[in-house]
Image 1 (cartoon, rainbow, N blue to C red):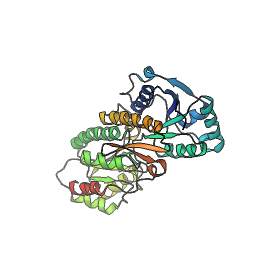
Image 2 (tube, rainbow, N blue to C red):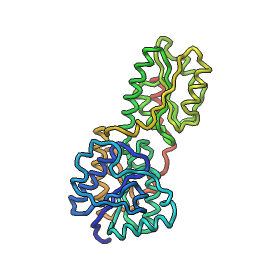
Image 3 (spheres, rainbow, N blue to C red):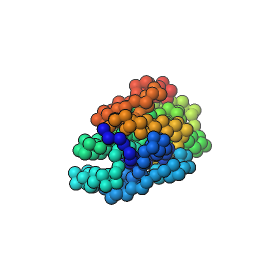
Image 4 (cartoon, rainbow, N blue to C red):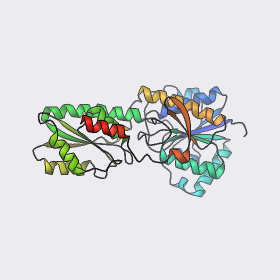
Length: 323
C-alpha cells in the first residue's frame, strides 16, 4: 500500500473519560513517525460536513487529564446513508487523508466497518466506551473511571442510608451491558445487583433482602439501566413487599461519563493510541486495538462488535457469596 502521510482521528458515540488521552497519544505517535494528523470534529458528522483541523503537538497539550473529548462527539443520521458516506469519502480525498483512527464503541465500529469496506479506507479503532462491552480487550477506555465514579457516589449514598436506616436502589448506566453494575456493585458491597445479562427473579431478590442481616442499618441494590425491570419498577416492588423499609431511588445518570480519567484509563488510552497508529503503518485495517493480559491484540471489527451476552460467572458467584 502507499505510504500513509495523513491520519484523521475522531471520537464518536457516547463520550468516555480517557478519550482525550487517546487523541493525544494518536497525535503524538503520528508526529513521531513524521505523519500529519487531522482532527475530525463531531465524529461521523464531521466527516460529512468537512469539519477538519490540522493537529500538532501543541493541539493536545494539557488534555491527558481532561474528561470528555476536545474533538466533540455525536451520532450522524446522514452517515447511515450511502450518499452521506460518499460525501465523507470525498472529503477525505479532498483533504489528502489516507487513513483513520476511530475512537468509540460498538456503533462507531459498525459505521467504520461499513465505510472501510465500501471505500477501501484503512481504519483502526480504539475502544472508547464506559460500558466495556467489546470483544478483544479486557477493559475499554473509560470503564475504570466510570466504575470508580459509581463507587464514589454510592459510598456517599451509603452514608445517608446508614444515618437514616434506608434501603437505596441505585440505577447505573449500561443499557445493553451490566458490567458497570456488576463490578461497582461488588466494590460497594451491594446486597443485590441486577443486570440485563442475568434475568431478574424478583422472588430471589425478596429472599435476599429477607435473609440478610436484620441489624444492618443500610441496604444497597445496584440496577443496570438496561435491566428488564428498571430502578423505578424495582423500587415500587420493594416498597410494596417491604413497607417497613424506608426505600429510596437514586439514578446516577450522566455523571458516570464525566470527570478526570483514572490513571488506568490514561495509561490504557496512551498504549492503545501508539498501537493504533503503528497498526495502520503495518497495513492493518478494519481492526480494533485492545489490551488483553497486558498484551496489545488486534480484533477485526466484525468480531469486536459481537455483544457480550453473558456476565463473568466467577463475578456472579462472588456476588452470591458476599451479598
